[in-house]
Image (cartoon, rainbow, N blue to C red; front, side, top):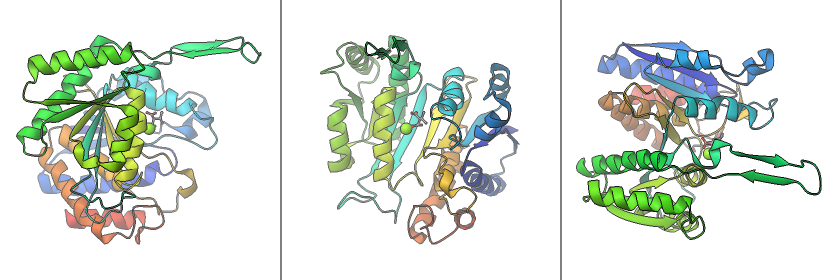
Length: 355
Ligand code: IPM
Ligand code: MG
């Protein structure tokens, strides 16, 4: 029995998760998957009522599940940073979800802001390191509030952290090549011309591991600023990208917008180790202003469900959900909330019908 923990979270999170679960019910019937779900109410409302966001015992409880589906984190009445750090980043770090996998795929019929680019051009994957870098929160403020104030925030790169992420990315790229979905090129994105310590560590690890264990994979390197330019000018150039956490955060928002926006972009926080628990999420925020209106696009959450299935031993079911998304997008007017030509629940129904 596949056990799924569901964290609908804040704002429009519950609405999009509801649609993803509707799709799960349908695909599970078709593919004869036995599963159970349990909902947890972690998020802004619970925090505002009781003070605690999530504690270690509660995180341990989540380890008993095969996967986690997350809606959205972020509440208009909670200061920015508190829930992000206290829940989203806390889960990523504590469950050691060291891979943040973000496919950048333009589905048929979806508008991209890029001129003269279509689904054949926008189809690559970003493997973002998810547990190190500026996200470690090392640093502090000295003489706060005075004219002599000093603030530091350290970029952390470890050989261990870089290596496990690089190996995942090389393996991922190889699997894509072998299944005919990729050209077998892995691009490391960093800023080695300025970040001469962290960048150097990543670059050497990339070269050593690639040369020794992945001679069949072509190695490519871009500085992060140039990478932003190429995302816009020649996205078709990319196959698989591997990138440290902070730069990965930035380029994946750019990736999301060229694939049609936050309504469609999904990601997975993956712990690929044996017994690891991974968490899948639509990468857009909680969109508080649309809450409860049934107008938000649920396809990012449905895409997150597809990734969850694909990575949890139900590849065929996951592929089936992706195919159903591809059959649904051409029917929609837009990927943006309120402009889809359908309500949130109608889009969920369309995906179910397409299944
Ligand atoms: C993301 C988000 C998070 C991040 C925020 C909400 C902490 O932007 O998942 O990309 O920076 O990783
Ligand atoms: Mg981000």
